[in-house]
Amino acid sequence: MNVLGITGTIGSGKTTVCRLLEQMGCPVVDADHEAHMTYRRGTRTWRELVNAFGEDILDSTGRVDRALLGGKVFDDPNALELLNAIVHPATRRRVKGKLRRLSSAGHAWAAVEAALLIEAGWGDMVDRLWVVAAPDDVVRARLARDRGQDETSIRTRMSRQMPMERKMEYADDIIYNDGDPAELEQRVRSLWHELTTGSHIQN
Image (cartoon, rainbow, N blue to C red):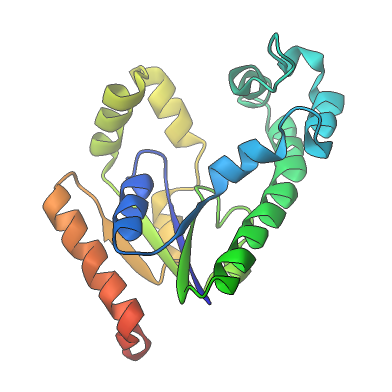
């Protein structure tokens, strides 16, 4: 089975691209969801996070509160590095397990959506990499509209990401998503057709 990686910066439209892929019959493994699953209450990763960051990252039911955890690492590069060192390997194991099951089910292609695919060093897991890109003003408008974030928070989060230009250097294909749904769908369908017919090999 071939694996297609989908990445991009926050607000670029990765999830929209993945929904289109699913509509065309390509199963998608959401790495963010798998990361959440790794630290369910009582798991080894849950225990490692509590040991590393304290019980005050837990909510009243004993589950990891992402907002509380995020507050501990957002402005601390060393804490963020520790968090990633705990969560990324466990997430990778879950993602690879999902891919093995999809391969056993007979799928020719599957996709992995991961915001930090490049940063986590997961390039060896994918056969083709799509980077979804959007202009900064479009990203800011989406985050303000869909997530209710203020301008300061948006700019801070964007500044802490790998720059889009660097992500593009790793891409086999780039999907520009400036907000036109019809153009986005046409681009995704065209690239998917190339993959499933093998014509991308000649590109």
